[in-house]
Image 1: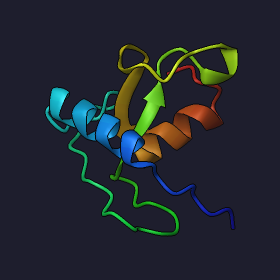
Image 2: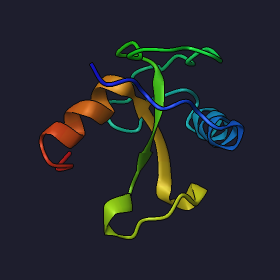
Image 3: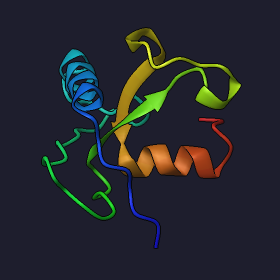
Length: 86
């Protein structure tokens, strides 16, 4: 099983900012997200908030807030599994 990377303080602050901006609604499905507690290890729950790149990082997308949205762990994972199409 792959362990998730530990968040940086800067990354957590960006995700919190995105969650607040989006009123804690997932950018993909629109349902409510919950925060991943500090120090959480292992696979996040399906409704935990994650950071998603609008323009893929692999294609030159940046970590700027203008290129990021908050999304459920499951929505983010499923989107990547089907090739970012939705």
